[in-house]
Length: 579
Image 1: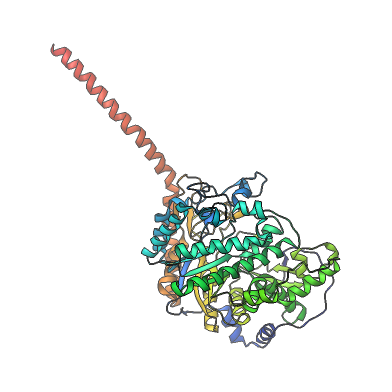
Image 2 (image 1 turned 90 degrees about the horizontal axis):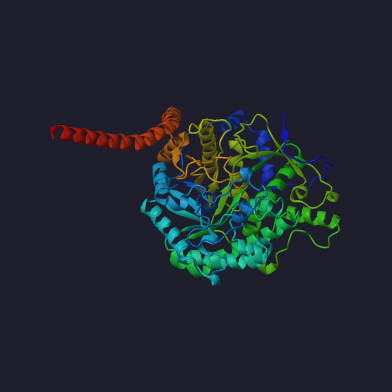
């Protein structure tokens, strides 16, 4: 098998260490699998999801709302990051308007009804509700009213709101005054903000997500600088930010648990994104250990404190050893006190799991003299199989079987928690037809089917959120990547939405609650492509129709005016001849 590297320089191999029981079981199952079992993993499974399984789509406030400075909203770190003029975003794009979602609530709720989804996962904008980020400075009543009306509109359409408190858009003033997530005081302000949300919306919202993909927020915001606030605090900033985010999550959970749970009967969890890491050589203990380390530095970094009370041992060992080799007196990974460990452990009513793709993992030792960094701390290299379908984005390949393994890993590792899949989707393929997204249908079919297999394996999966409802602002990629079921024309002021083929296909999965039989599932695909072909023709004809409309708006009044003038002239001539 040939692999392509995802970065990193070769180095010396490290000593073999013990691996977890989960990986031993995977090794036994892989080496001892019968041909029938191997085929079962690769083959499609026809069946239905459990009764009451929740199907949905998702989005986030900053990526879709626009109205960045309207109705009392304060600036976020992403507003500052995109307005800086430093080339932080591809094409110097901003989310000032984005999908114009702030002004298109009823239209977007109608799209959700069209999809037949059970739930909609969206985030609240912290600076829209608290312009400075601090509750004591004042609450924006227009922000409260906006989200309250939105939640009511969802419930009126029998769509359950799953609400994320923080999806990366930290109030700018908290960054300026306190250093954002580098300062533990931000955790206290987040707890105040969370309490406001529980108070204002908790009578109707029963599913809360504290943070969405905090690993990426910490790594790209405080390590690589590719995301707001754009800091490059290599090997330190991301660990400190994550440490405070975990504390903030725990504070919010305890606030809900002690004050609101008995009245509102809701659930509070966190959404953690992680790709699956597969050992390059399943018979090589070093590769198995590297793959385990990949998952612990990715998923375990946040999940382990919440479910076990502390960081994964492998993170503490690796970062501690490298810190000592770099001449530091203390580990760059912060330490939880015994009281904090007890306080954080058990602070999740469900595990939100985001997943997009898979990597092959092999061990590679990075010398400590290269300097502190998250990548070097892991001592591994990520690879991709060039035979995996490429979906357009450099990092995203379609590898459905990795999803099943990640779900089973989380189920085993964290004591069989209720799992909500909170993000899973594919971006726009390069040079493709706008609405006929057949590759997204194949991705959706493959990944949801592997999820069904994981449920069959015993994973306690309660719901699935496909990412995303709309094409939207994609952070440092601007508008170049499109994940939406609905195509958004960002060149038009009103940001019109058009359904892609995947809308029709996802709707069929939801209605059937799974995959009933080969013939019917195949008919879904053909029907979806037929529908999108018609929609594409209509979309292609729109410029001509718009031109005709403009011409009509100009010509009809002009012709009418000329007719009136000619009639007036003729009448005058007639009257003159009679006189």
